[in-house]
Length: 272
Image 1 (cartoon, rainbow, N blue to C red):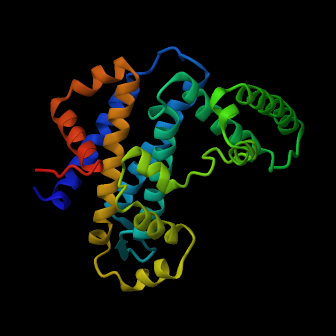
Image 2 (cartoon, one colour; image 1 turned 30 degrees about the horizontal axis):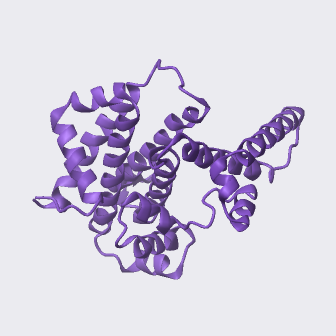
C-alpha cells in the first residue's frame, strides 16, 4: 500500500468523518467544568488540518491582466502541522492520558491556570476588558486554591510546583516528553519538531528551502501523513470519551477502518 498515494483520498474522507463524530456531541450536557474545552480544542486541531489540506491542494493568484500563478505554500502548511501536533499533544495530555480523576484534575487545572496567567500580560484598555480582567483574576485565584488542594500537586517537588504556579502547565516536561507519553511519532519526534519549528521561527533552513524545493506538493506529502495520523487519533480519542461519538465512529465502516489503521501507524505499527 503506497502511503503517499492514499493520503490524498483518505484525509478528506477522515475530515468529513471527524466532523460527523464531533457533531454527535451537539446538544449533550457538559459533564464537568473541564469538558467545556474539549470541543473547542478538538475544533482547533481539526481546523489546522483542514487548512493544511487546503494549502496542499494549491493556491492560485489571478492578476489584473488575467494571468495567474499557482503554488503550494509548504511553509505555511508546515507551520499548521506544528500547531496541530502541539494542540493534539495538549488534548491527549489533559483529557486522554490521565489515569484517574485526581490526575485529570491536576492536569486540567494546571492548563486552565496557565491560560489566565497568559491573559494577565495583556493590558485592559476599556471598561469591558477591565471587568473581564477582574473576573479572570478571581478565576485564576480559584484555580490556585483548587490545585493547591490537589494530591498530585501537593506531592510534587517544589520546582514543579513553582513552574505550575507560573503558568508552565507541562511542568518540566518538553513537547518530546508529551509525544513519548502519547506514543505519537515518538521515535523521530525530536527531529520532526525541530524541523517544523524552524518554519515557525523563520530559521535559515526554512528560508533556504523556499528556493531549493522543486516539487512543492511532493515536499508536503510527509507532513500530510503526520496530519492524517493526528486526525485519526483525534477521531478515536473523541470516541473513547463519549459513547455517542463512538456510535458515530462505527456508523461508517470504511472511515472507521482507515482511522484505526492510521491510529496504529502513529503508534509505530506498520500499515499492510
